[in-house]
Amino acid sequence: MTGTLMHRAAADPAEWVVCAGCRDLIYGKRLSRSLGVCPECGRHGRVAAPERLAQLLDPGSAELLGFRAADTDPLGFVDFKPYPRRLAEARRETGLDEAVLCARGTIEGQPVVVAAMDFRFLGGSLGSAVGELITQAAEEALRTRTPLLVVTASGGARMQEGALSLMQMAKTSQAFAQLDEAGVLTVSLITDPTFGGVAASFASLSDVLVAEPGARMGFAGRRVIEQTIRQDLPPDFQTAEFLLAHGLVDLICPRGELRGTIGRLLSAGNRHVAASGPAAEIGDALVRDPGALEARDPWQAVRSARALDRPTARDYFHRILDEFVELRGDRLSADSPSLVGGFGRIGGLPVLVLGHQKGHDAAELAAAGFGMPQPSGYRKSARLMRLAAKLGLPVLALVDTPGAHPGVEAEEQGQAIAIAENLRLMAGLPVPIVAVVTGEGGSGGALALAVADTVLIWEHAVYSVISPEGCAAILWKDAQSAPEAAAALGVSAERLLGLGVVDAVIREPAGGVQADHHLAAERLRAVLLGELARLGEQEQMELLTRRHARFRRFGAAHRGTESRREDGGLSA
Image (cartoon, rainbow, N blue to C red; front, side, top):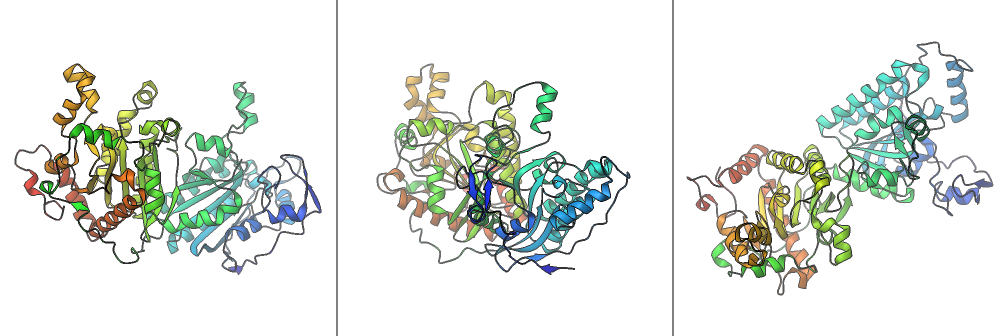
């Protein structure tokens, strides 16, 4: 049976509360108004499941899902008291049937199924009933094709149920796999604490992992690890900040911003949205005939492409997109700041965006790794592209890199393998892909984002197998011969268009894109909307066939640039 969840406040808070973080005395009602976040130190306290639903779901939208799970005591477990008595006490103290509460509703107008865990109920432990309720919530999301949000708070598996508790990890993971196959978006909100069997199953399997500040997540707890390996651990070990730095969560979001952020994430799962508003005028901004372009000095083109005042990927994203939520991490060990990606909307259309990131000064360049991604960057982009395929979102990629990061660490982590995996993935990605070389397109590090249906380039950008300096050092035995190498390599936009490597050239504003970021972004947005509209008319098989043909013809003796159509398409 379902029922309406009243958006009630928590039980009257104590008049004064001692913050567990800073130990300051906080007026109870003030703490309640700040959603349980200490106004002095910012510590995010634990929130009961009913209050969590009230905080997240739009007022008046929540409806409890009357799922049922049978009580079980398979082992007749007794420690200081019988397991059934512990259950009864937990129910009396919390007012809940189990350690998870399931509901449907909306967040920022976006439909969602929510399963919110409650640490007060036996430490939010994953027992048979909890596993069943989480699975039923996933099945409801599958049945209605509605995104699923799980709010995690757990110490791990429920020991009183022995191996049956362990089986819930497999059961819930299986349910999430079905959501993956069906293309249903899943989001985990990681709250403090999330450990053991929950962290090692459904909590980590969602498409997007959002963590509250300071929330801890891991398989084994800090105390167990310290006692086992006899080592001192970092102070921030297993915190949200630690997890973000190591590529294990997508973003950290303060509690007061969760509804808006999760609402934007959920909207990305709404693929049935057409671009809104009239198409922007492109005019002669897009050039498909190499003869219509003025020949440029190749070395001057290289210098222009590297100019520090050219817009970066972040600059473009914040100007061309209606909204942007950055997603981070390769879910293995790291997050490369040289490659940025996430959900966005352009003209109302949900998209997945990726871009090499540089900077405008020495400090920004250093922080961004000089635009040269580590393997974690390419693995992050692969993860996000798979997510785009799952949700049916077009991919927009902005290419601007000297090349993939060279070095011992990158080689140890499999730089070549990471790039190769991206090339293979993009070749068969079942959604439209548009790539734009916005600055410097260097080697395989650039191509790893450019196996696309349409490849465009700014008028003053370059694209090459190697940097002119590298080519000169190898073949001319003199790096000073870089200008000669640039000419020989055919790096300029008009040469690339003539070779068919790019499908069209975007004219830059007078003085280059660096002279007018706003106009450059407007022009890029118009071009991208046009390409997305054109590609969106193609069936999936036609899209993949044309993409295969585009790259198949390079170097084939019986094919040449004459196979390119005037509209930028390719004959299959």
